[in-house]
Each structure stands twice: as structure tokens, then as C-alpha cells.
Length: 114
Image 1: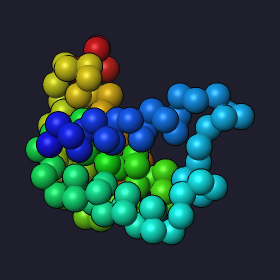
Image 2: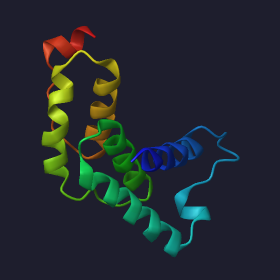
Image 3: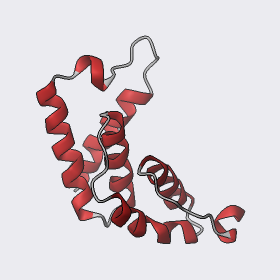
């Protein structure tokens, strides 16, 4: 699972951290076969659902590919507990992934304090 997380993190960072003039975009530099392979990797990563970071990067990867998130409502329910805590990393992953998956989250007062 660490390998999947690393792969997702590298792909995400390479698409967002390079300067705009040098950035690779999924629509311009990946073949249809590449996109399908990445979609399979991201979708498989969502199947576990226990690790919030992996879920975040998989959802964001699918979003970058222009794909819909499978079973988005189920994933939204799995991410909700992270929004009730005070862990900043968990709040970030759940908020960003939730936005990409079009979850309807309400921020708790405890999360607002963080």
C-alpha cells in the first residue's frame, strides 16, 4: 500500500508543482492506454478506503484525468469522521478529497478551531 501511496503522491506532485510552462497535463502527454491504466490504479486504491491519504490522492488523480469518482457517496461517508477531529492532516485530506468527490460536508465547530 505504501507503493500505491508513493505512486499517487508522485503523480499528483508532478502535475501540480512544476511550473505551468513545463507542467505535464493528463490530456496532453498521456495516451489513452496510459489514462486507462492510471484510472485502474486510482480506482483500485479507492477499494481499500481505510487510508485517508490514499483516498485523497486517488480521488484527486481521477479528477485530474477527468473521470468520475466511483461510489462517491460511500467514500464521502468514510471521510466524514476525519472532519470531526482535530488532526490537521486528516482535515485537509478529507476536505480536498470531499470537494473533488462532490461530498456535502458540514464543518464542525471543533474543526473550525483547528
